[in-house]
Length: 143
Length: 143
DNA sequence: ACGCTTATTGATAATGGTTGTCAAAATCAC
DNA sequence: GTGATTTTGACAACCATTATCAATAAGCGT
Ligand SMILES: [Zn+2]
Ligand SMILES: [Zn+2]
Ligand SMILES: [Zn+2]
Ligand SMILES: [Zn+2]
Image (cartoon, rainbow over all chains, first blue to last red; front, side):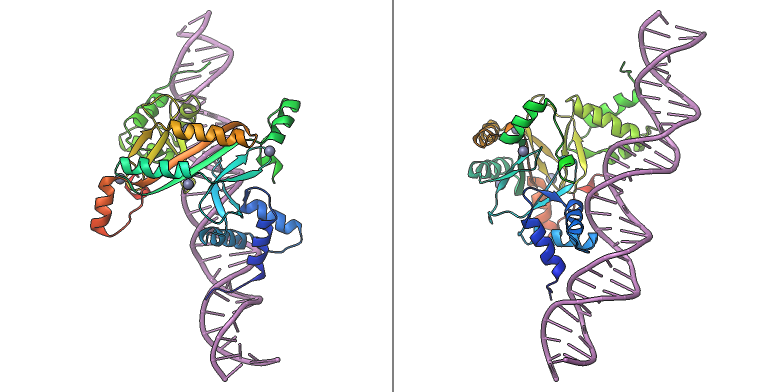
């Protein structure tokens, strides 16, 4: 039977308190920083569980790291992510859903799933970058 | 200055001879199997170069592995990939391009890029799976 | 509240893909 | 051909993730 532990709850809350997508390692650091003695393996497990139960969304960063987020929208949706500050907007894209389904069917493919994510610079970061003239990396700002 | 080596050419050719997306490790195995003594690190480097020069497309597999492919279409496009046999269809998706651009602009995002991939079972593999009743994994068939 | 069964935890080792190291080999301009 | 400079490749290092497994603790029946 599935038991309730403070660890799982801690991960859920920490994820809720996080604005954008975050990696397991980063979330573990955050938890440690706030005094929690939770183990790294447990954070990985909790995030995996949240993702499979649909309570959290996950995606692979372009660098191949798995990132997680507690989304407000419960149904299937996609994301518009700022690659500088991590700000994330949830996007409903019926248009794309239909396209994906159609393109798979046209070619005789079944059991189609899709990965659709848009990465860019949010309005705020666009200003900053223009001011700085430099292009900082997202990961550096979210350790 | 950039020099020409048989290793780079070997990687380019091996990639051309590959039907679907393939990992650096798998391509290295293929090359070795055909008698080439090329080193693994060199395969990684060559694939990275091909990807940055636009001669090859790359994507992250759902398991976080980087996969490469020599595509016939030179311009920007997307892929419909069989998760069982690796068969890949190149897809032009003007509809999605417009959507991605629009959704980014609507939210004030600039420098928008996107990741759009469709994974499914091709017609052939659909039959096999139905016959077998089992769901084999892609990676197992492409060592 | 108590004990028991069993899921869960967490320190650590193991795994696996990828990148860094650096001496040796190869390329190419001259 | 010679030599400066790039490239290679065996191997180590790295880093995210997963497996191990003894110790812990949740929650059930009592
Ligand atoms: Zn931003
Ligand atoms: Zn969708
Ligand atoms: Zn197939
Ligand atoms: Zn596109």
